[in-house]
Image 1 (cartoon, one colour):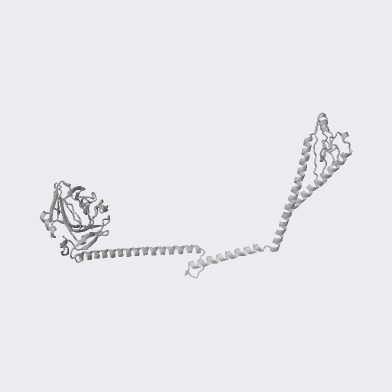
Image 2 (cartoon, rainbow, N blue to C red; image 1 turned 135 degrees about the horizontal axis):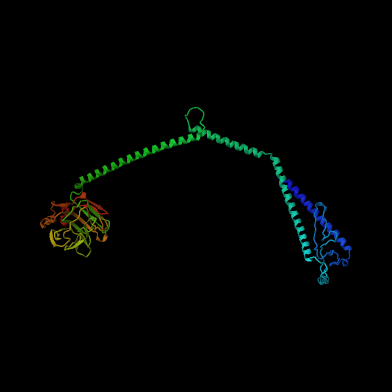
Length: 473
């Protein structure tokens, strides 16, 4: 940095010396040119208070040139034309109106005057020199300010370094050594804790590997414990499931044992509202039937009985249906084929109804109160009732065990629902209406344990054939 400062200072001094020499040379040339009459030399300028532009005539074949020599501290050798011996051309400012237009006209009329001289080129070159001098002066001032700023900063840096004398480096090294020592202590402690009880011998150099082995061993132990817990949990779950199954079997047995005690006088099903979710399911396996008789007691609670009974299979939801829509006669559906039944149901009273059918000719009979009300034929002849379906009370099935419609739901009470695999005689139907029993050929018998209620339907004690309700028959 000091070397740069010295070089810049030397250059600045040399440039200032050169400028001073140029100014001195210009002043000397102006004085000598003033002593020679302007007319004798054919000059185009007049002497004035601020000097004039003086020059010598040069041959036509030669153009005047400027030879500016900056010889270091020796100054300027001169401003000359072709020969250094001739007079110098000096550019000085002229006052307003200092130029005589007649002289310029004379020069234009006489081409022999100033042959080979380019007057405009001389003026432009002189102006460029002046601008260059001004720019160099500004640059010198800028360099001086920069040198002063750099010198001040250098002085501050030298003072700061001298006062601290390298103490930050020592403190930094000390802190680094302390951190390294702490890390070594931590590594030693980890190595000692990783292998307790390995003997009092010297510590092994690979403590980190020992720690990894110890962690892997612990992970394996945890994995074994987790597997053991899973097996134990599965065993407990199995025991719990077995216990629940035993309880369910015991509950079922108790329910079957107390069936008769629950309803010693019989029971009835109650459907208090017309919904699409209230129904009862008879848990009986219905076999293949070529003929059947279905009987039941019912007490409607609204106009239009709805659907007291429906049997559906996967292939046909209307395999066997007994229903009555509002303001329509009762109907018997076999395999979705319909027969109108001449039955008249009264609201609020118990009524006994039986319907029989056979595949021979599709013959059917309808009984109410033990008496034949109507008969016919051609109802699904040759068809047989398919087994494995669902026997639902209180709803009409649009699919197996579901698809209920509230407009076709039964509202009221049902009891003593039975299904036989043959056509019962008129005498047998009449005996059933008098609360007798017919067990021969029975497929479905009325049993509390075989009837399940859903959606709000209830089992209530009492039935039409019990002593307490005979008056309502």
